Image (cartoon, rainbow, N blue to C red; front, top):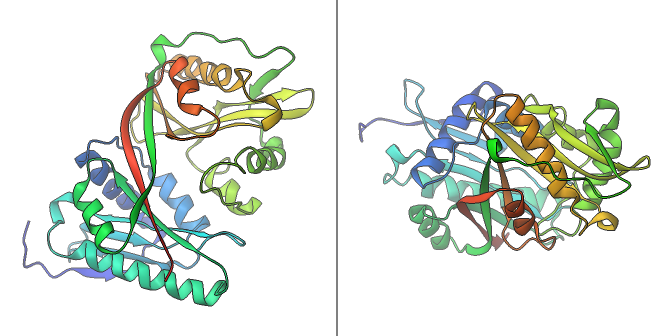
Length: 315
């Protein structure tokens, strides 16, 4: 690495998605995490969540185009409260103050968005890093952030998956496109009591989920009680070619505590194994009110790494 290289800062473009995925994966791997980001993840995020890439994103590169760092400042959805500030510096390029400068810019931009969009509302800034990324933690704390919540990334070996019966009276089927509106409403209801939840509009949600390039309909299941959706599990491509990533696991309140999520997960893992995928991964709030960690452990998941979310109010 050349410490006298002049760095270039510009906005993020859609064709930067693969490079952003590589950057975020390198940051997580260096701190003991899994390389889970894909180009399709970042394409959906840049197109469906970042309000204006020209003003709300920054990419730092060398003159030859090597990506050094990035920062994104997506505004909350209408009526929301949380600014999810994504970003980071490649491990090989830390120690130059780039991360400090990016975070300062993100804070300033979030303040501008707050004044522009919802000056009377209370907004929270949220960022985060892997549990062992102490350099990032110190940077956050210098800017007034404090740890707010802990999350676990979990993994299961699909070769060990065992069938789990659905609760009596329920049936499950693979996702079909005609279910997207009903699934959207079920998801908004199922996650309404989860920490940090923000309701997104339909068009933004489908771009990030069932219409995203990485969505795997054949590795997703929707459970019904009659014609009503009771729960669902949605699968996605992972950066590791031998892994499926389970992005959403939801059970509506009337059907909780009956083993539905475990049964759907077992179906996904068995299907993933049949597709030649050895592992299934997912992320979970360590303090989930639904007892999700225990549910996942019972069907074979174990903690692979941990993540800390940091928060502070918008000034």
